[in-house]
Length: 132
Image (cartoon, rainbow, N blue to C red; front, side, top):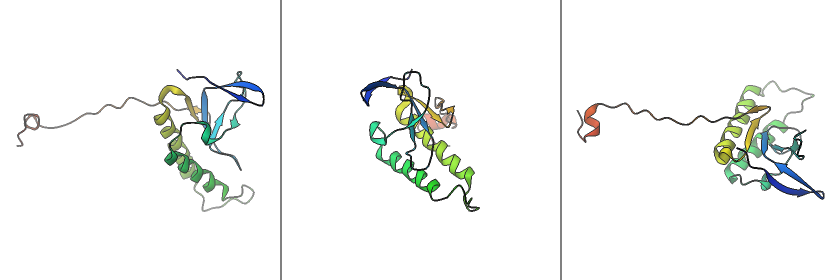
């Protein structure tokens, strides 16, 4: 269940329970709702969240990568599939860092992590300390 963190902004109290990884010119990669109705997404600051410095640097890189290309002059060298995949990896890593504390979205898709199940394949002798 996402937590609702209250914070003051312009003499109002807002609830923050969802984070979206997205991009726009001059923005950070972090977007949140600034009203209790969760009506719209607004760009937020990295420092407002307990995000690891390594992940923040990757988010800044992703934003810089996209800002290097003017949308009015499409660049044939920019592989948007790679840009989108990188953004998705940011959202997944943010979900790993925050767990269920926040609902994390990439664009408008909520990120759900599956529990990791490890399966070990070995012969019977491996478990008793002998190797065959």
